[in-house]
Amino acid sequence: MKIRYTRYAALGSAALLALVSLGAVFATPWAWLGVLAFGALTVLGISDLAQTRHSILRNYPVLGHLRFLFEGIRPEIRQYLIESDQDEEPFSRDERSIVYQRAKNVEDARPFGTRMQVYDSGYQWLTHSIRPRHITNHDFRVTIGGPDCTQPYEASIYNISAMSFGALSANAIEALNRGAKAGGFAHDTGEGGISRYHRVGGGDLIFEVGSGYFGCRNHDGSFNPEKFAATAADPQVKMIEIKLSQGAKPGHGGMLPAAKISPEIAEARDVPMGVDCISPASHSAFSTPLEMMGFIAQLRELSGGKPVGFKLCIGHRREFMCIVKAMLETGITPDFIVVDGKEGGTGAAPLEFANHMGMPLVEGLTFAHNTLRGAGLRERIRIGASGKLVTAFDIAKALALGADWANSARGFMFAIGCIQAQACHTNRCPVGVATQDKARSRALVVPDKAQRVANFHRNTLKALAEMTGAAGLDHPGGFLPHHFLMREKDRQMVVGDEVFPYMPEGFLLREDDDRFGYLKRWRRARAEAFEPFDNGV
View (tube, rainbow, N blue to C red):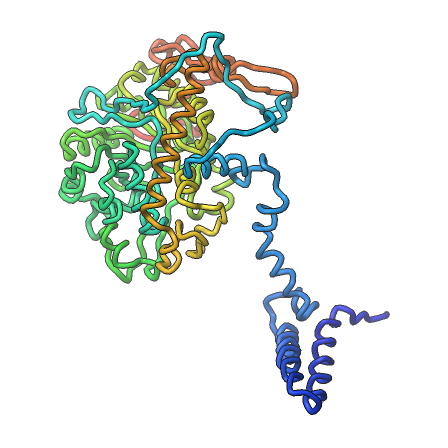
């Protein structure tokens, strides 16, 4: 059998050239450069042969390193040279560009017409009116606060979604909050507590309370009512949001290793230094739907009557109905619910969770909206939507499907300079957004990026006002499913209310409409427990 040695050619060539260079040092001292360079490659090749971790390096010493080089720069090569303007990885260049342009307050118009394939399956659009309206005030607001809320909040219909200090840098958090202050909209703290950088800008805050109860916890990780009341009393805190799950990794807890906990993170989260910071997968303050309603009432009382709600990615639909039945049984309702789509972002998530766990926003939002309608509670509870909502069309679509307002995380990250390098989990963010490396984060200049945050918000709502007026409406809250159309198959058009209809008010209470399987799950749901009577979901 013939043995082929060509795969060792790079190592052999390096060794030969090292020897040739060594022989040439008597003729010219510059030959020492060759000795050093080729000698180093020879040592590298011998090391490759001896190591046991990488098979490709044992078979292709020296040359095998090119694979790792190209693998390392593959995302950049794809992003800058290969992907089209419509490829979503996860945001397309078109989507990123519109954010950059609006944040920089520069021209965002496009010449020569659409580049989208309007007859392909999946294309979506909104209907327009022959008599469009001119809307001069695009500062659209929604009042959040049910009958038990004594301090309702007049929120913008577009706000910054939950991102914690620790996931984002100090400069990024400060820029977002200063931008929110300048633009008059809200900034969700994320579950990592309220840091000094959330406070310094003075922007409105939505205090997110996760399963780790950061900022309102005892040392054993349980909820501390006194600490919560002190934090919630801050006038900067406008609403309280209980985090049940997030779209990118629903049902998954987390851990911040002790080595990554800085004094500032420990201060914000109220955790000790030198100890791993655990975020459990579920809450310890409640374990049943009825107990959850009691917790909501407790937070509302401790906060002095501020709006209290919860955020979740829809999973077992019956479990959401269990919560709704608990609302009916106790008479306690949240002031708002934020539905997070599976397409939402995160700093790090297991691949299987990121790709295959949780319900996408369109279906989750439709289900939550119709379940509340069916229980006769929709008018008491506002619904927010989050999950890849960065353009005026995205917001209009969410409102048409039942939302009262929209949140965005990555959209505002783009506004402060994120380039979608997708290095959030490495602590090596190239633009200083998602890192705790102070040398990297100093590249993010707070005053400049804060203005971009305000610009992006203002120009996006201005575009939404133009779309609203073109549809013949006075307010984007007037969008309904029938304004939204899509292609289900090539050249086949369907109207939004055929696919995502508003179900009749009270239909679950009357049990008179069993379309889409709502009644089947409603009958199996119970307020006393999240677990079903049977083994179904």
